[in-house]
Image 1: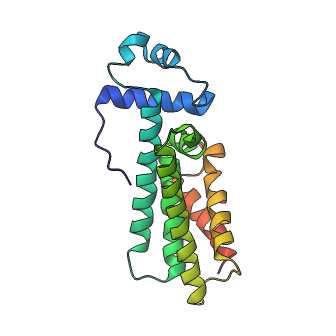
Image 2: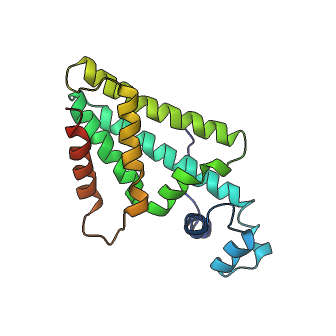
Image 3: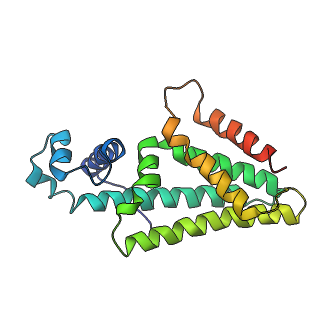
Length: 193
């Protein structure tokens, strides 16, 4: 995991604007000139704030990875039943996804554009996070709290269901992020309990 320092206001504005463009157009189709125009800057002056658009992609991907790990750690730190920990891990995952749905969409789809070694580091983090869900579900099966013949398949199904959220979630929608989180947790856990 990376530790990210707070961004200066201009850099944060650049990141937000770039993230929205990456979500709408894709990382590869978004040019530095387009980003500069969206910010009301000359293309050359943008480089006084950032080195490349990949720098932004790196910050988005690794920053969200940090948030996902922190949420999972908080959800599983107490000595609660495994099913309760899994419920809280689902809620934490949804909260990260809904906190910034543009960044979540970029995290889930645009990571492929990271250069090495960042891409391999990102994939290792993703595998470790999925592994944490697999291990939690396997512990629940061993304790008799959860029922599935294949904890790895259950973890992938659960995460795939959750990770579709940025495709349909709208902050102005009728359900709050917490309502969505609790409904998804209830729906997904009912198949395992």
